[in-house]
Image 1 (cartoon, rainbow, N blue to C red):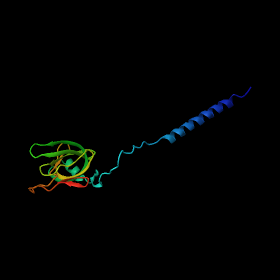
Image 2 (cartoon, rainbow, N blue to C red; image 1 turned 90 degrees about the vertical axis):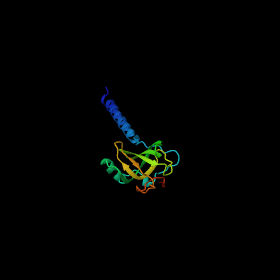
Image 3 (cartoon, rainbow, N blue to C red; image 1 turned 90 degrees about the horizontal axis):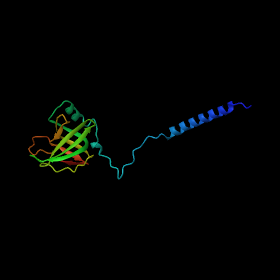
Image 4 (spheres, rainbow, N blue to C red; image 1 turned 30 degrees about the vertical axis):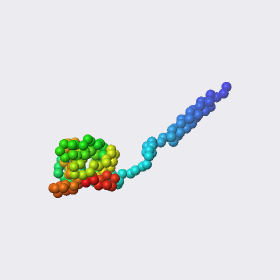
Length: 163
């Protein structure tokens, strides 16, 4: 009678080889997903308009300390275009994200300055007067003051200043 051990040992060895082979195969196939390339031409925002924590430090300080009437420069991305405010002086309004946790309203006077051709996702720089509120605050006087009562402000989009 033949010894039954060699076939069992052979089967166990085959199973081990299959398991090890499968493990090696699956480990070599693990690939970190990569985002597909964007459609159309690639454009990088101007470096000066990127969201940079140090560039927005004055804005963050004013928001954290709930201060108003602070002249500052802020950078961010347009996240929402709002309807114009046509009561009193006409204002173009938009929201921009200056930090992951800070969104600011910009009220830009259309009676004193030209309309800005903004789109959602645009990188902008805004110089004006910050007013704190519970929603993140607002920046106004982002244009020249013909009476000279306020420091001149502006909004910069794609290297062009609107004031």
